[in-house]
Length: 256
Image (tube, rainbow, N blue to C red; front, side):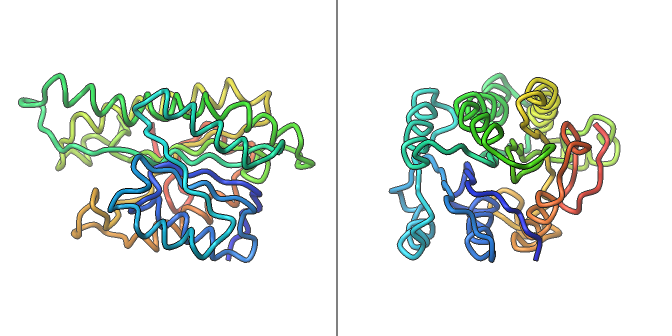
């Protein structure tokens, strides 16, 4: 089992699918983080039951209300996390929350485009901004040399559908809003990698594969367990050379 080595991890969209499985597998690791912050829009809602069950069994797991489409909610979540960390920083931020719409080019409308962009691009941007002071604190206080998830990192969960080069191969599923906003998320991550390098923060996008979740559907190639095992294995190996790259769940580089 790969050793991640992060003392504190925050996952958005953690109430189901890949986010929930990330939390489960992080909890099961021999080097489980001292703190895992599982964020969801409605932690007290019906979809939060599995997460609440985990919280009742693991004192290092904290549920945090965080709506990535609300700047107020994001700021309140950052204050909550900072209070729990009591002066230490946040090692790893995984921007996993997202929405998917498979809408064709001839019928996609303004709201389809704007709602997807708001959740899948603006959300990760604002979340990263809000938690940046805690990421910087972790990087500054770490004895680690170079960039890694053990020191400080922003991992944005993307999709190969956001690859401009791969469009001819993947256009079986048009998904215009999703493709466009994931391409924008990829650009955001490249900008973060350049901007935050001097602060000691690694920034990378990871494609989790086509996963059997509510979003991916049951015809998908991967189980959520397989995908997350791969993602965490990749995260454990990231270093300076990977910051600003586009990787998949196996660690292979994808074209922009």
